[in-house]
Image 1: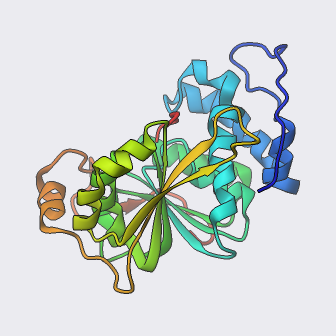
Image 2 (image 1 turned 120 degrees about the vertical axis):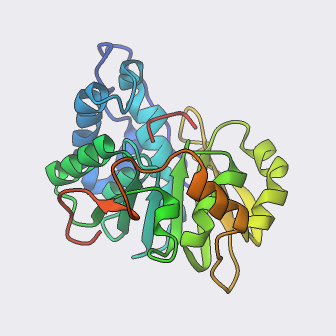
Image 3 (image 1 turned 180 degrees about the vertical axis):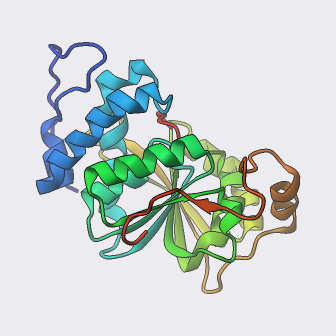
Length: 266
């Protein structure tokens, strides 16, 4: 694995995103200016729209953009990715910026957030991103991809019940988690199995390059696509999180890109 060293500049003013550390250029390459523009949008309308807290802006790079960006290292070339509970576009928008070869679908149930996401996609000129309004459950049987991502959405057991039916055969759910990721994986293993997972493992990224490494739980499915469990279907039809203002299924946001959670430390 490549080794990078992050240098910090304490001269940045509170409320503004730090300048990107040197490792950012390794992750984003010639698309770093787009990542910087996204950081400015997050610090501006991302805060005013309640997608991230104002205290997060000085640490957008270390805690959010780089935390998400390193995930691109485990994604194959020209794959399709569904990001569930996108919120502030973490990790979906970050990965779409870092990897223009990806076909990224952002799935988010709240209209306020999907409107912001689509506006941001348009402002950044990202032609490889599509924004869809709804919950993961709203797209069962309608949307499948080799990779599904999620960050700070739910515990692994519940997340797997929602997301595994969105995977193609041999697909992977990549869940960005915090320091307790390994313990959560062990505790939720029975629920993962019931949801249709064939394996689960912890991947740690950026140990030598980031102030806090990214903990990624990879949950895989087998050669037959997963169907929703009966309990997941019951929770989906009667539980919280139904899309407001949507009578049947999910809605696309008002405008779309050409092909296609709230910020948290996980």
